[in-house]
Image (cartoon, rainbow, N blue to C red; front, top):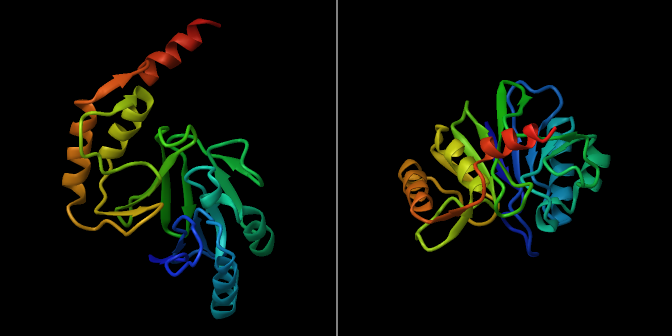
Length: 212
């Protein structure tokens, strides 16, 4: 799978925007976040001329912050893309994402891992065929043990750590390609050694059900 960072040369503050070109997909690829740099639209228009079809069939949002989601309306309308997001309040959303959902594109699958922390609607997106992770703004490099974490975040990170991936495509900054397995393992250890508050997600679910 060929992956482009559409904001690599952006002159404005924006998130990374990853275009995943899915082999065998009839109607274009997957866009991870839309960013807020209008130059992204120009790249997609040129890409459409180059390949003779819309380069984007699906937009997956890691969360609903402005720098990640500003161009949803423009990209959706111009390239007829379907918008997937965890927050129901996302402008232009077509389908709500929940933990464990799998979105297909060609021969690739994009698995949704809910990991509320940076925002309540934050998700990571895992592609098992390529063994890669799109982390959005979820912190994956946890260096110390002096922070406090909600149990919902801890549970999400534990699920993340079960996945097999060797490259992380973050919402900001450079791709992480070195020592990813050790990084995630150490981060999880540091989280477990930090202060954890809140109910266990499973216990919370059962207690909610008991009230009805």
